[in-house]
Structures are given as structure tokens and as C-alpha cells.
Image (cartoon, rainbow, N blue to C red; front, side, top):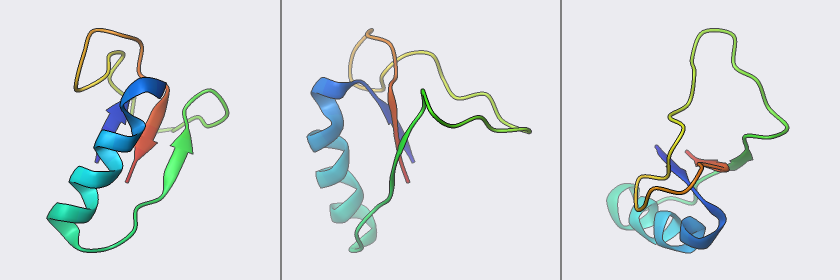
Amino acid sequence: MYVVCKEHVEDALEAFVDEYEDAPDVVDLKETEFSDWDPPAKCVYCDQHGEFLVV
């Protein structure tokens, strides 16, 4: 699972496929709320705001 900014979505997709050998789902964090989990505020690759969840 990766929380990433728009710039790093492609990197997260590649990393997910390399690790799990399956296509991930991409969730827009602006449009989705989780009742039991708060996503990290920053991208895993940089200090920008995390906008997408690749899972």
C-alpha cells in the first residue's frame, strides 16, 4: 500500500506490480474517507501532500 502525490503515482504502480505481480487499485483520497484509518499526510517518495492510495 502506497500513499503518493500525483507526481509519483506511476512509481507506486510499478512498485506494487513488482512486489505483488498483480494490478493495484488507485483510490483518490480527496473523494474517500476511512472510518478506522487516517492515511499518511505525505507522499512516500517526497514531502508533497499524499493524494492517492495505491493498494
